[in-house]
Each structure stands twice: as structure tokens, then as C-alpha cells.
Length: 154
Image (cartoon, rainbow, N blue to C red):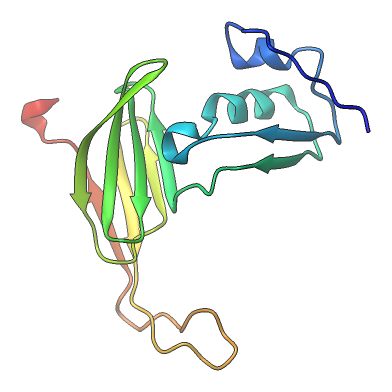
């Protein structure tokens, strides 16, 4: 097994990947919840055109996450019925600025970067069938929540 290690500091993710990334490799990356999700690394990997990667991470992640570069806000949609808003004050400093109540079980989310609206979906589920992991979606229970900043604070 060929293991390469480096302790260099790079100005950006594409520079860090230059010359070391190629099709079919295993890439290990770490993180701590939402703040540790390597969105710049993911973007640089995508832009590089590399294929067939195996990615190993120590990050259990969140149910849904997004980053709005224009506002410097990161979002985590949590199954406990909250949407956590984290502001990036500097490249290495983050702070939780809001916790928005969402329907219990809301997990999947999306961000429209053109208008900065968040979309969170939820549904209610019926009983879990024997041997199943989740019950069926109950008719009429699907909901889409649109979240946007108060126009006064924009």
C-alpha cells in the first residue's frame, strides 16, 4: 500500500489536490459536524474531473446541509425539528446565529443561491412494517417549508 502524507499549507483546495489526485484513489478526509464538511474539497474534486474515488470520512454528518457563499452562512437541517444557521466569520471561525423551528423529522433541504431561500421537506410516516426501516409516507402529510431571511435584516 502506497501512503502519502504531507504537512503543507495550501492557498486553496485545487492547489492542495494538484499532482496528487487521480482516478480510482482512496481519499481520507475528516471533519466535525457541519463545520467540518469539506465543501471546498468536494467542489475542487468535482471540478478536477477525477472519477471512481473511494472517500473515507470520520464525519457522521448532518441530515441536510448547505452553504451560501454570498452571506457566509452554513445551514444544517436536523431531524429533531430544527434548522441550524452558522455564520462563517473568517476561514477558521464560525458561530451559530440562529436555530429555526421546522417540522419534526425534517431532514432533506436545499438552498437556492440566487435568492438565498432554504427549502426543507418533511412528511409523516405510518407504522414500520415487520423487517422494515421506516413506515410508508402518510397521504397528505408531505410538506415543503420555504425559509428566507426577514427583509428588514437583509
